[in-house]
Length: 92
Image (tube, rainbow, N blue to C red):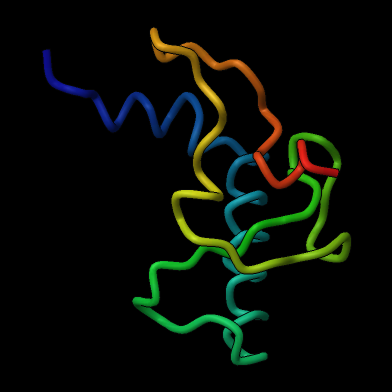
């Protein structure tokens, strides 16, 4: 069965909340590009110290991370999510 991108967009990505979050993520990346910390095609992500869904904003702190560090959480052998805290956050 093929993935229905239209329905996915209509139900989630196209909502007002998600559009605003996407605009904030794009603004954060533009801010870091202007500061010279990231460049187009450098395989880096601009991460927020506190995620949007947990009440974070662009003003609460930005950092540059590799894509793998920013997009992954600890999982068990079956692939189930174990922790939503990254290795860096667990060290604190």
